[in-house]
Image 1 (cartoon, rainbow, N blue to C red):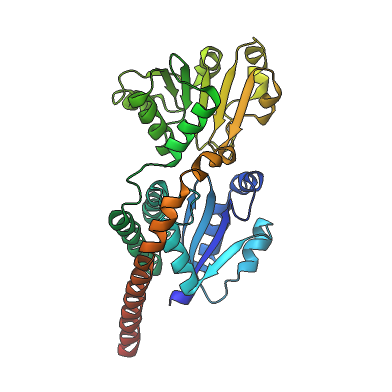
Image 2 (image 1 turned 90 degrees about the horizontal axis):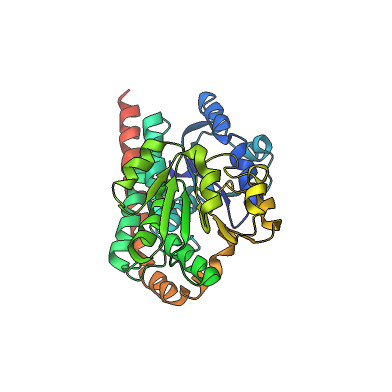
Length: 338
């Protein structure tokens, strides 16, 4: 039964940021739903993060990975099958395939993807077994290894990276676009530890207002006012899930040519900020892939922890095998009874 478990991975390891952007914009879930209707797959869960898009599927006998290559017009798909796929999922959910090893966000993202797929009715029994146990694995690894005691998560790395470029946040006007997990984490860090002026916006103004109740020093702006806020800001951080540009050069050119120095950090995939503004004098524009140098200074301790606690993945893998075998026996008995 586990041989039917497939993963198709489109990550930072095999696709560039541009290629991942294009893939997201293809509307790839429509194709998965077609596969589901044709019974080529029995269920799927998909996850999108800033570093990866991954498809977790229970495949039928007729499914071939070449179908994805053909229908998505992408040759460079990294695929996993059966036990290899389960072990890879456990590695990912523990944060061991992340650039920041052991980071918490991938666990949250995979949990959310699983629950979202449950609501949409695309989760098969096999996927249910595997994902329930994978989530348990991710929690167990972090609890036992305590890998995040010294926090070097993506939000903290992003803040450290900005500091390395601008020296201080003191008295700076910071504009945060988006209210997803990453944006909220950055907002919380800055609100707690930096003497800066914070403004946030989101397409849903209601969500911004709700978030403002948690952070008393933070101002909110309507989404349509974003260019006005950019004009007044020193630092702009954007991390939305929009499929299109949020800040376009044609709407900012006059603003950015006022001689004021501005720092932009685009943490979104697809990107939120028009790359062409980077050519304007006074503008510093950075993306997700620019910030890893800060992480590399903190990596040795985590590598030691990963090696010490890797046995957890093997134990949990064995547990999943047993649950799948137990279900297979039930199915076999039921079929014989018929």
